[in-house]
Amino acid sequence: MADLARAAMINRVLEFLGVKAATQGANSGDVEMVGEVLDSAHERLRKYGLAPFETSSIPPWAQIPFRDYVAGDVAQSFGITGQRLLEFRQAQQVGERELAKQVAGFRHAMPIVADYF
Image (tube, rainbow, N blue to C red; front, side, top):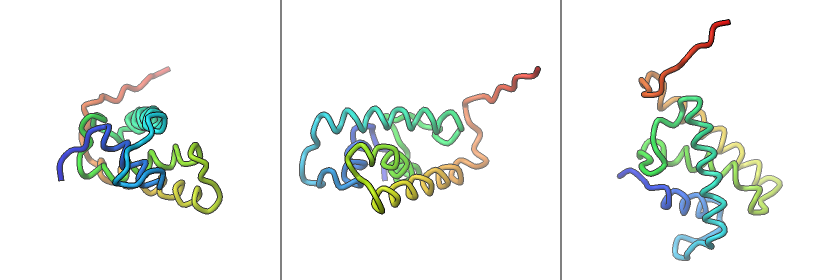
């Protein structure tokens, strides 16, 4: 499995949500919205050291948990409600935990800076 680019991850999120089938093209508005959420989710995870990769090159170990995390953020925007929304939110939590397990012990390039008062 190779690294995945941002555009491919956006398509995977849309397919996972059931917004588009694998054989059809994505609506440009949907792509833009998922792209914005993907960037926001990536920055949030990066802040906590859970995404030591760029969105232009998502490594195989992070592809499924990152997809699930982004899908949990954007599901409600596509009108997903009730039990199905709950399932995506639970998958998001599992994705975050999986990313945390994958990077445990990994030495990040981002230094941790402490503020002493």
